Amino acid sequence: MSNEEVYTFHIEPSNEFRFFKDKTEVLRLDEKGFHYKGETIDDAGEAYKLFMDWMKNSNSKSNEV
Image (tube, rainbow, N blue to C red):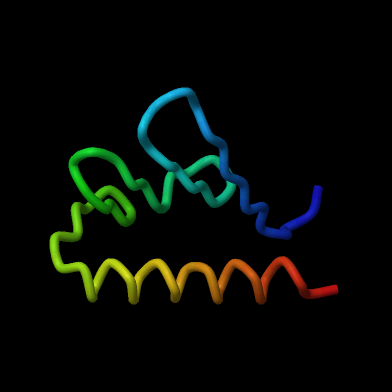
């Protein structure tokens, strides 16, 4: 078994997006707002920063050989 991190996402027939790292939900966007690691982020600037940080980190990890 590898120690490599696995990033996945899925879309269910609902009005939300959920992103996972391994089997743990990291990001969720739903009718109640933006959630990061279980915490609701009310500030749009902070939500954007957290999302972009997560995207950059997940891309750099998935591109490693």
